[in-house]
Image (cartoon, rainbow, N blue to C red; front, side, top):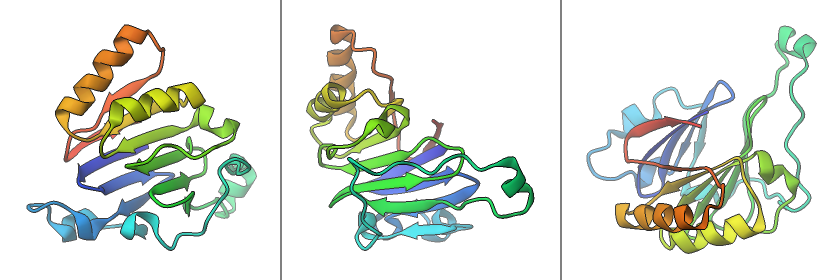
Length: 177
């Protein structure tokens, strides 16, 4: 999976052999919307409003695709769901589940988050990361926000020796997760 954050709530995500675009209309000035949306398989406007809802405490990611199914061309496709306002869950074959949280804490969820990549976007990153760490141990937490908030989050967690894996997202810089 490759995440590219463009600023605001705009993402381009390569996942499961497809391209998902989140909030293309909310891209910052200077981002070419045609370039951003080029080749998109799954446009997600309004940070997921209108996506099929899931209950994250009982939801589970799809099982990996069987080789026989992949050879038949019946492999799965990327699915995006809403787990409440400001929470998008993306499920792709043979990929870790991806949860994006815009200015909110993670909802109650099941054990699937231990394998998930969680993107915390917006403000109060340190506090939200701390609460996420107390609730679960996701595979990776990616932070998208102001530089000083990201630095404060890293400094706090280094002192805690939390063991949580963190990366910082920079606008227009692609990151493999």
